[in-house]
Image (cartoon, rainbow, N blue to C red; front, side, top):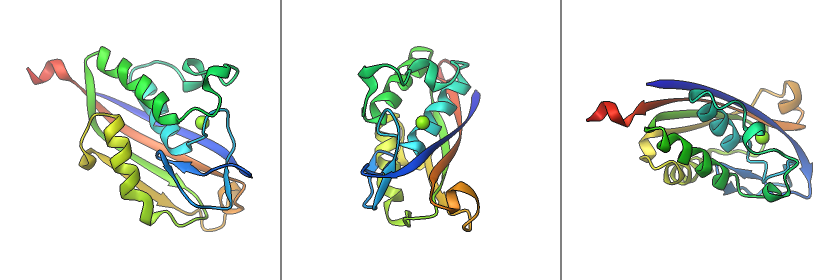
Length: 161
Ligand code: MG
């Protein structure tokens, strides 16, 4: 088994869609980034890279490459999952927490879990998505940005045989 942890932050700006866990969420601002800036999915990607010692996601998907401009982060996640599967690993479980002062995310959590599980070839009950505010503190509390942290476990499919 291998564990990974991931972390990511993106700035909130006007004039962008808010995409979290591959789901578009109605809000007056969105996250700024080269891709769709899906901070939650990026934290999971970062944790997958960590579990397999692939370095950080900026190394795999440079933000200077026009190919990745405004790309859905689910496609990037799928690309990393291909590497995970090539190495004979599969998802044990994923736990991710997104830090956002607003909007309320509770009603979108299950849709995110279903979407992410589909991309990662696992069951919904292997993917936990949680959301928290930061009680008005820090850059998240001031609604300047959002952050996400992920932990996950991979298991070797060879061990199943
Ligand atoms: Mg990012």
